[in-house]
Length: 258
Ligand SMILES: Nc1ncnc2c1ncn2[C@@H]1O[C@H](COP(=O)(O)OP(=O)(O)OP(=O)(O)O)[C@@H](O)[C@H]1O
Ligand SMILES: [Mg+2]
Image (cartoon, rainbow, N blue to C red; front, side):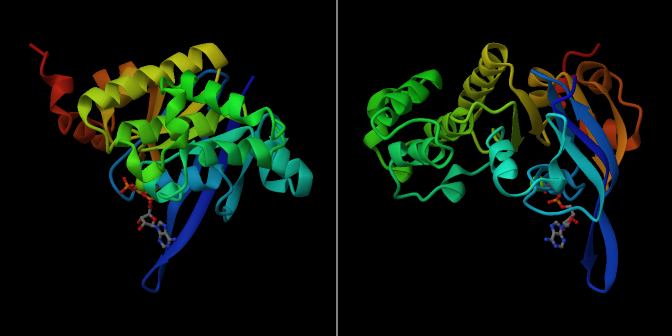
């Protein structure tokens, strides 16, 4: 069983006059309740893959199968229904949401748009979502710009789970948080995955974070997969030059080595 299968995805852009493949023939699968990490240097194509999977941009070649359906072929009501099942969390929730919107408004949107709860039910659903991500229900009345970065990222996660997705794409979702808040958010993600069986496509440049949350890792280099496998094994014993360089650049991974 797979939740998401990306097959031979290719996305070309131009750099000056020269076309180049930002994503070059990339394939991977993610199963239910599984975390697949994408790692790789800046510009290796991680966010482009996220956008392709979310169908924010269209590939030049390849396909995306989501919950057994050809995701790129869907349109209209079928696409809207399937889109509710694949959610996203980005690095900066201040950029993703209207900073002046209340927390309640941010969480009300998906419930309303996808017809998940009636107007009368929604305040209770919003309170339950906030509690599910470890926030006080009283936070609902506050504006996005008034709450802390960690609280904002919890709101982003609450919004993502509002539609009961089978997959969440997280692009550097914990990168902007300080270490203690980061640890708490990673715990929350692990807990949600255990409880709700959500799969994660987890993008990070931090192999320490990837080792803590991912089952498998794909390492990208200039748009191509350079190596992939069990996250702990790959990080403990990288085979590719890029994999070795990424491990070497993450000091706390090697600190305990004899
Ligand atoms: N819309 C675009 N037009 C032209 N080039 C683009 C576009 N989007 C991305 N690129 C290029 O594609 C390549 C991959 O970019 P991408 O954002 O996917 O990298 P990334 O791995 O997410 O990097 P980072 O770790 O810095 O976030 C880069 O060379 C980038 O400049
Ligand atoms: Mg990126």
